[in-house]
Structures are given as structure tokens and as C-alpha cells.
Length: 129
Image (cartoon, rainbow, N blue to C red; front, side, top):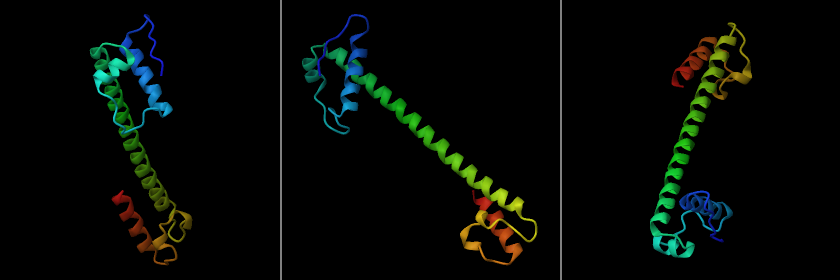
């Protein structure tokens, strides 16, 4: 990659952008050992302190992205739990004493004719979630 910098923005910001491009393009691979700060500074013809600042910025961005990913995963899991709970509660509400939509029942109780048992299983499942 060509390391030509403009004077409009800080060099470390431009380094961060160029390194990210190398990562996205596959030139730098995840988990691959990268050269030392001094070696990178020589390759890019920048001060080692500038390179260190760029790498620190990349690490900060990586941590921020990881936090966002973790938060998104937790929100997705919570949504799935609430959705499952809502489906079971809806199943219980649809119960009219003799009929329940079979598609809403857990598979292990489909076919049972014991109304009380169905309600018990549904309530137990709702509490579990």
C-alpha cells in the first residue's frame, strides 16, 4: 500500500484508515503477527510515536466494536427470550378449555388429551423463560 499523507488531517488518523483498508482487503489477516511499531514506522516513513498512536486508536476502535457486538448479541438473546415467552403466553390465552392451537404447543405435549396437564406444562415453560 502506498503511504502518501495529506496535510489536511492528522497523520495517525490517515494511518488508521490505511491500516483498516489493509485489514478489510485481506492484506493484513486477523490474528496474523504484524511488524513492530518501529518496523511499521520505517515502512510508512512516519515517526514511531505517530505509528504507536495509530495502533492505539485501532485498538480502541476494536474494543468499541466488540462492546457494540456484545450488546447487540445480548439484545438479540433478550428479544428471543421475550418472543418465546410471548408465544407461550399467547398459547395459554388461546386455551378455551378444550382447544388450543396445536402449532403453538411444545412438541412433547402434542396429542395429550389432559387439559390440566397442557396448562401446567405451558405455565411451567412460561416461568422457565
